[in-house]
Length: 131
Image (cartoon, rainbow, N blue to C red; front, top):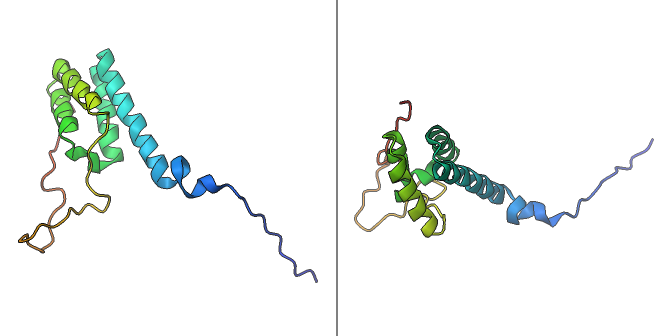
């Protein structure tokens, strides 16, 4: 009876961090979705921009608090491509970095704030792009 066990060790250290880690991969996908949004706004494709916006926010809800992304969403909702281009340019001037909520959905408590549970979605805008 053979009691040996074969074991293969993969010494690929990129699996533990960097761009190939789950967090790095998530950031890359968010960046790709943002680039698709900005590109579709740049070329003037309103419908593609709306779809890219929805895809980005659905992929990472935490970015929906970004002030420029919120303004872009409102402009797309009202079919104002000029405003969407303006806010997209401001976002790019800021380095193309989206501000986002912490990953656990909870902000830092300030002194004097209530410790009662709060609805994390209460301050988010709902944008209907079905028009």
